[in-house]
Length: 64
Image (cartoon, rainbow, N blue to C red; front, side):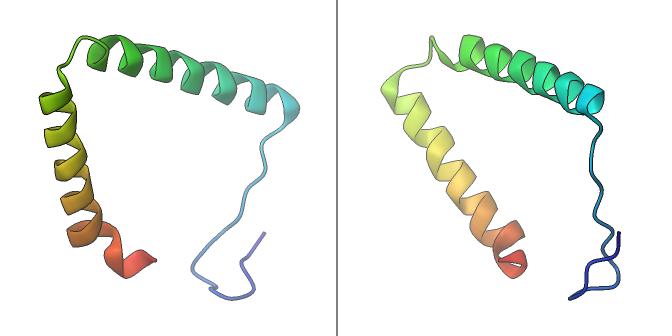
């Protein structure tokens, strides 16, 4: 389905089975992320937060 405001975009909808698959994949990714950052110090987490803020401002700012 085409986006009425931007013809370059195509909107898609997953089937119920596809949505279940994606939910499982994203759940697995979240578990892995939590395991990897769970042992980091507060200082390291703050550094990561600052880096993500910078990335968002420099790369994704034009898309908001």
